[in-house]
Image 1 (cartoon, rainbow, N blue to C red):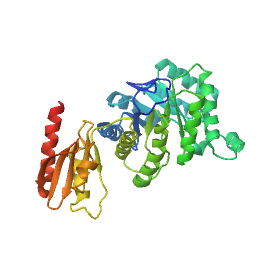
Image 2: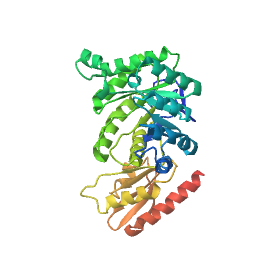
Image 3: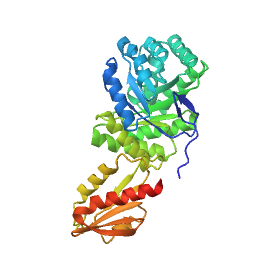
Image 4: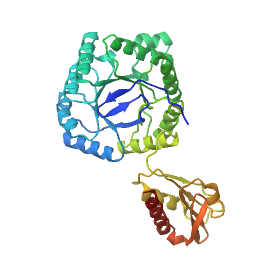
Length: 355
C-alpha cells in the first residue's frame, strides 16, 4: 500500500485537491472557448468518460465572456487557463470558475498579480501556479546553466512566496517538462520544500502511443513516490483518450479503481484461440461497468485458471473450446464460439451476487 504525501487540502468547486482526497482526473478542452455550444458538448462528453475537472483556454475577451454560460451548464468544475492578461483572470474569477491557472511572472507586475489574488480570495477561487521547463525566468535559467529540477523548484518557490505574502494559500502547484526524469525529480524536490497539492503530468508528451508511454512512466513514478493530487495526461489525441489513459495509470499504480480491469496473457505457441480478438471483445463488453472486478483472458486452457487465480472471473482458450473460471475454479467448459455468450452469463451472475 502506497503512503501518500500529506498535502494541504484545497477546495476547487465541489472537489477537494490534496489533503488525502482521491487523486482528481482532469483534462483540457481543445475547442474555441468562445464557441460555447462546442465547448460545452466536449465538457459533457469528457465528464461522461470520467473527467472530474476541466480546464479551458481563456486567450481573449470573447473566451472570457463565454465563461458564465459554461460555468452554469458544466457538470464538473471549470479551471480557466490565463496567460499575460490579468483582466482576463479577473473576468474568469467573476464568472464563477473554480480555479485559475496562472504564471505569476507574466501578468504584468506585482500590482496586477495582487489584484488577481485579492479577487480570488474574495470569491474563494483557488489558484494553480504553473512552472514549465520552457518558460523559466532568464535569471534562474542562467544561474543553473539550463533547465534543471532545482531551477524549476526555485521558480515555483519564488512565485509561492510572492502569493503567500499577499495572504493567499489555496494553491495547487504544477512543475511540467517533456522530460520524464526532469519532471519526476522536480516533484520530489518540491515535496521537500512545501506541502501544497501537486498537479502532475508530462507536458507535450506526444501522440497517443508515445505520449501514453511517457505519461505512464512519469506520472506513475510520481504516484508511486506517494506524490500527486491531481493529474492531466497531455496527449496529441482526442481529450477522451487522456481520461482513459489517466484512469488506467491510476489503476496500475493502485491509487484508484475505475470499473473492471481486464488482464490478458501474451500469445505463445500453445495458443489455439484468437486471443487478441477475444480480449478486445471482452474489454468492450465490460467498459461501462463500475464494479472494480479483475477479469482474465488467458490463451491456454491448461495454465490459464492457475495463472489467473486472483481474477474474479476469467476465460481460458483451448482447441475448439474454452473454460470459464472464477478465482481459479473452473465453472464450465464451453465451445469456442460460445465463449463470449457464456462469459457474459457468468458475469451477470457474479454481478447479481454482489448486489
